[in-house]
Length: 339
Ligand code: AMP
Ligand code: MN
Ligand code: MN
Image (cartoon, rainbow, N blue to C red; front, side, top):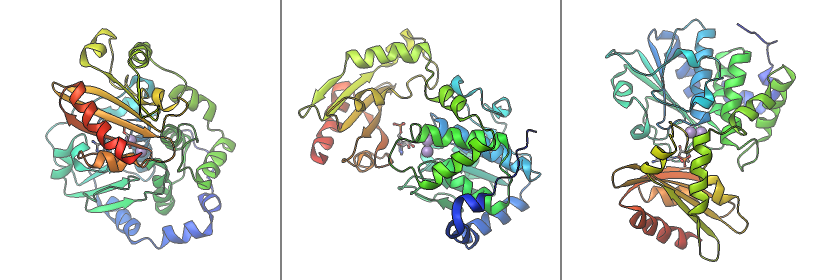
């Protein structure tokens, strides 16, 4: 194990945060629940992004630090995350077993949890998350919607549990933070985000390498898909809305693997004058996964909520039934109202 000099999280997070964390009743209950549990399993949301994978791996390493032997379950994820420590231990299939404790990370709704049937059957459940519309589906819910990433919520939990942030834990946490903030760029980054990153950099965590692996490297298939997205881009409402799509056939032609569609929604958002970028992806026959991003005005989480989805103010998603034209019309109608 590659141990770093212990990081003084108290110093980084400040006295106020430390007091809040120490007095937090949920964290106290979480600590007790973890301590008494033997068989622990960690879950995250479907189509896992860097925050989902980084959070899962960091909890895995953290629980190992306190003598537990947890299991992680992620059936599919982008191979771009394979460089992270511990990915070799991820289970892609599960046996029919019962668990003492199931932990859900970065997931606002049981519907979106990969492995929800095992989660529901566990004796006890914990959810740690940062979505504002989290519906508190676990026995214990530690949710902070002011945090830009689930990984940042976990920092407070690790502080409470007295866990030393090792190089492995720090690398995984920073991956979550870097991906969910687009490299410390999006609204929602906090002073603590930078303080934590600065401290980890000081201790030798290779932030440039993480950024290069998770933000600046794309698969060939992702590049091929981005050509289609660019080619099909439409602008509506005087260029305030950008819309594009891909179908299952496009993914087949590009030999796309899980996660290869990640980031395609950002192509529209980066164009001058665009407030809302909408990218839809055929998920199954007659149903499209909608991804929305906004620049500084529209609450896209509210729009997706109307269709049974959700997310954050500037990044949200939902699933809508229909063909491209039908889904496009439904989502654009609501977006126009919000402009
Ligand atoms: P995506 O566009 O898939 O990258 O998702 C953007 C954000 O919205 C993420 O924080 C997701 O967790 C959230 N999100 C995406 N789809 C859904 C959904 N169907 N229900 C709730 N939240 C979602
Ligand atoms: Mn996520
Ligand atoms: Mn997240």
